[in-house]
Image (cartoon, rainbow, N blue to C red; front, top):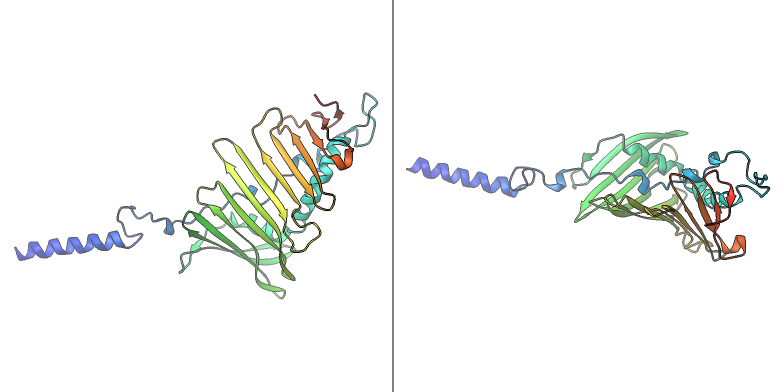
Length: 280
């Protein structure tokens, strides 16, 4: 009888231990969320898509030449592309190092740290070798992210960008600091995704304190609308002017509205060959 009581006591103690310590069993089956690495936010939450407005999209005749109907060709699309190019250049070239660092993170597996954070630790190259340390830590229903970048002989553990993302990957933010020599916030990013609806958007905002273009932004989205299912909304602070761009992702026709440039509030359209056409 005594042996039976001792056995029951041991079973009870074991059950308490297993249900108390995460990862040792219990109701969560050993899948406590703190012991599962968070998913990296998609690259599209960091890097805006400018592919439909790259100069490589141009086909003969080039912008400014006469079209088949004798009218100037491709001026409307070219103006839309010119506005997108300003932000594309800033991110692609101005932030080549943090962009490359984040892109490389998808090729590596994280390691859990003593404080519960997960660390992606790896080298990458932009001209020369750099070291990236990306930390992701689950806090309630979101993940807190911090990217530290080092370059031997130049700087160590510079917090180049940081952000937060919902655990379900539906929304989040990033903040990019300018560079190791000017440790000031430069670009704020907000993003949203709805996988069921197939929609998403991302917004870059100039957040340089006291900067001449503080508050200026470009907002890109995929809406699922008809006939235009993608857009840019670009705000220039210095001119207090909005440039609105809408286009069809599959067929590439679209339209642009820019009161300061065109001198009116109307839409100016292009067709699938990027040639200027009358708006429907």
